[in-house]
Structure formats: structure tokens, C-alpha cells
Image 1 (tube, rainbow, N blue to C red):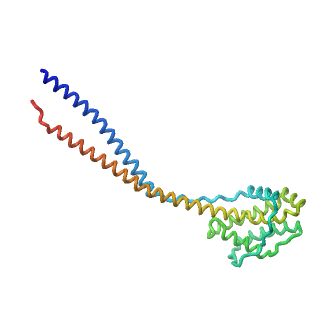
Image 2 (tube, rainbow, N blue to C red; image 1 turned 30 degrees about the vertical axis):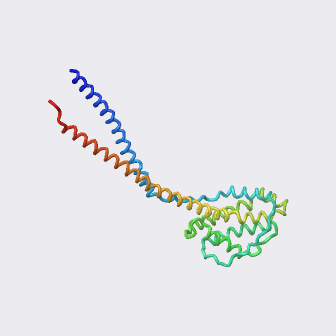
Image 3 (tube, one colour; image 1 turned 60 degrees about the vertical axis):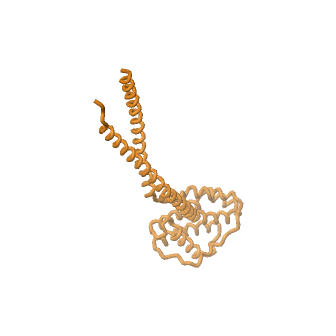
Length: 250
């Protein structure tokens, strides 16, 4: 009787232990399969990572005009020459007409102060070349014209602004500094955009390289967790078979 009681107690303890072990194993199995799926997804995602495309920002003409106004209160810097570079811009009828508008606006403004360009044709070439080289997509006629139209709009607003004209009428000493800033600020904006694009693309490439390097680690972890899942599942199957084949006393 006492032996039977001990056997029953032992059987209960064994069943309790097996029940707890079963729960632990199920938790481990769940974590293994879920973890392998998550790390596998992360690994494959990073493996296919591509650098993001830089989005150009069109110039805000109003902000550029305000910058010119602000520069009128700054200390004048030595004037620069408007002599053109040696390379000749390409011929483009639509662009030429837009440059004509710019030259007309500039000419009317300079006449107000009894001034002229040192080399009108040379400056015209600079305007044309800037449009053809600094546009966000220099081989695309649409973006070239967008640059030129924006330049025309900028000249029209800044060279006819009543506040600016009033300052220039009273303070002739700031004219050279104003003119230099006016002719430089628009192309410099596009040059800065190109520089920011280069920095952005470098950072994106570094990020992609890092992601692809980490993808191998994630895939190794996913594979390890999946193998763990398979091994534990195999052990459970073998234990189940062993228990079913165990000879029980009658």
C-alpha cells in the first residue's frame, strides 16, 4: 500500500514536471519561430536596401529677396568682375528669350542709377551658362527653363522692390555690394543644393552599406532560431514516440 502511494506521488510529480516543461518548451518554440521570422524579415529587408533619392527644393524667391534686403545693412565687400568664362553656352531659342527678359530688367534697373554692365554680352553668357549647368537636371530642357524663369522672377522682384530702391537712392555706397549679392544669390542657391545632394547621397550610401552588413547577422540569427525550433520539435516528437512505446506494467 505504501509502495503504491509512493508510486502515485512520483507519477504526479513527474506529470507536474512534464507539464511545466511542456509549457517552457512551447514558449521557447514560439519565441524561436517568431524570432526567426522577424530577424529573417529584417535581414531580407536590409539586404535589398537602396539609397533614398534626394529631393531638390525650389528656391523661395521671397526669401531670396529678403536676404538681399538684409545684405544692404552689411559692410560692403570688394566688387567682382562680371567677365565671362571662356566656354560658350549652348544655343536655345526658348532660353534666349528668357535671358532677353532678364537683360531688359537689368538694363532698366541700371539706367535708373546711370550705370551699365562692363560686358553685356559676357554677362548674358553667364546667365545662359548658369541655367544650362546649375539647373537641377542640366540635360532636361524643362528644368533648365524652370531655372531661367525663376531667375527672371527673382530679378523682377528684387530690382523693382520699392524698399530696396529707396535704400539705393539714399545710400549709393551700398550699390556695389547689393549688385554683387543680387547676381550671386540665385546661382549660389542651386550650387548649395548640389552640394547638399552630394552629402545626402554619401550618407545614404553609408547607411545602405551598414544595413547590408547587418542583414547577414540578422539572417544568421534567424537561421539559428529556426534550427533551434526544428531541433526542439524533433526532440518532442522522439519523446512522444518513446513514451508511447514504453512498456507499462499491468
